[in-house]
Structure formats: structure tokens, C-alpha cells
Image (cartoon, rainbow over all chains, first blue to last red; front, side, top):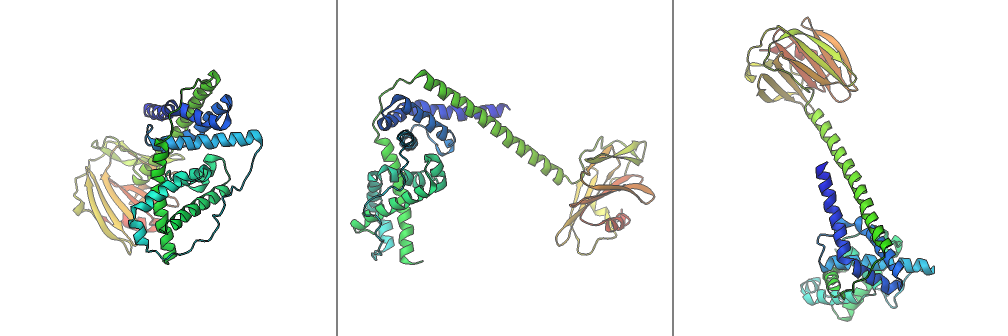
Length: 182
Length: 227
């Protein structure tokens, strides 16, 4: 029983430490979207309900990776609150010109793998992506979530998540094609 | 794998690596926020949330540990075969045993005043009858107890012999238990869907057979013990 108490205390400290570390950042990011103090607080609260269930995904409290993770959760929670407030439940986000079929350019895969510039270019392209695509892509590729988990985390239909992932990938493919790498 | 699929796989690897770097970069480049003053309601809600989650986590862990404990207990019962406890192993007890059967187990008590059994090494104990397909796999001696493990194509059976001592408990939950006679002495035969157990004795020793063998085969083995 003592062991259980100690373990709980450790988990609780993690959640509370995250809150103390990032509450202003989360509030600030939420407030940029909502422009309302109370709604921004709601976004922080709702975000932490989700974060508490995902503490296992967070290894280190004070690091850029965790910082980005919490902001993704909070910003998307704020967006959901915003949509609910304005009754804007739009679906089917679009990006121009990404539906073109991929063509095999005949490049040697090993050349691409060996090219560190490819990673740099894709990194830059990911950072420049529209956040609605970037967030789901990062949750999948950097934080190891599946589409279903992302859907639950961001309160977005799973189908939408899959579409966004596919679109993000196509956009990145296009970047590489433009650079003549893929 | 076609070039197209290979390219796709490699592209996925690159995206995964780039995504990790991008997540770090984005987190690092975020501007530092200004301190904000939160409402009392907000702080109270957060504290309530942490407290609620702490309780949930606690009950979840209690449940988890309880399940583990139950599985561990079950494993101990199964692995231990039939012997649950034995009292005063070195005291001399007697021949007749008293069988008390409850819903979950049967307890066999040996009355005091009997003869002390001789010591045997495992090599001195043999079975005159061994069911077809079974071969001796292992001999073991622990204290006064000699065990012989026989292996068949699919199953094992275990014969063990011990000085008559204290009491012996066997798991007879969901088993049919009956008293039978072996060598003019009262014996116990327990059977359930997984394992059959025969416990009998003579003047100095108690014997036990456990395995998937049926009653007839167990009786034949019991009548063939040589020492």
C-alpha cells in the first residue's frame, strides 16, 4: 500500500510539474486563438485532462519535445473550443494542388537515404506545414500515436486524421519532388 | 518489393527522423510566454483535477496489483501440485489418516504414535508398473521426500513418497473426491478436468500420485511400488 502511494505521488508530481512548467505557455497559446481569458483557462484545463492520460508519452518534463507536445494538445483543444463557441464544425480541410499523383522519378533509393540534406529539407518542410497537418504528422511520427489515438487526443474524427496524414505526406512528397530528390 | 514501394518505405523513414527533429525545433523556438494571473476558479479546478486523477490512478493500481496477486496465487497452487502444507515433518505420526473434505480442499491428518519411516535414496524406489509411453525423467530427494517424475508424449505424472507426518492438504476444488482402499488402507482419489490425484499410505510412508492418468492406472502404479 505504501508502494502504491509512493508511485501515485510520483505520477501526480509529474502532472503537476508539467502544469507548473507550461501553464503560462499553454494559456498564452490558447489565448492567441480564443482571445478570452476564461476560455483560455478552459483550454488549459481540458488539455490537462488529456495530458494526464498520456503521461507515459512524456519522458522528460523540461525539454523542447515535451514543450511542443503540450502546445499541440493545448492549441488543438483551444481550436475545438473556438469551433464549438462559434458553431463552426467544418470538416474536410483542403490544400490546393496536393492531389496530384506521385510519379516514380527513377531515383536510386539508397542515394536518398544517404543524403542527409533530404532529412534537413523534410524537417524544414514539416516545420512550414500548415499546423492542422503538422500536428497530426508530428503526433504520429515523432510521438508514436496511431490515427485512432490522435483522433481521441485532438477530438477529431479518425477519418479526418487519416486524410490529414495523407495530405501531409503528399505535401512533403511534393517538396522532395520539387527539389529533384524524389 | 518494387522501386515504388521501396521509395515509399525510405520516404517514411526520412519523415519519421525529420518529424522528431522538427518537434524539437518547434518546441525550442517557441517564444517564452509572459506570466499570467489565473483565476481562483481555474486553480481550484486544476487542483480538483489532479486530486481526482490521483484517486483514479490509485484504484487502477490497486486493481492491477490485486489481479497480479490472484494470478500469482493461482500459479503457486497449480505449480505446487497437491501439497499445500505439511506440519512437523520430523515427528513420527501414525498409519491411519483422517480425511476431511471441504468445498475447496481435502485435509489428510496422520494420527500420532506411528512408526518413523526409514530413509531411502531416490535410487532405491522404483515402480513395478509404468504406463505405456511414459519414461522416468527425473529423480529428486528433498528432506524425507522422494519424487519421481515420468514423462509421456504429452503429459507428465509425478510419484512422491514421504514419511508419514503432520497433515497434508490437497486442492480438491471442483474435483470429485472419493475414499478407496489400497493395500487394506484407506486412500483418497481426487479427479477434476485437469489433474487426478491419488494419496495412500502404508505403515511408514505416505504416497502421492498426480497427473492425467486415470484411476485404474494409478491403482496399478500404487500396487507396484518397490523399495
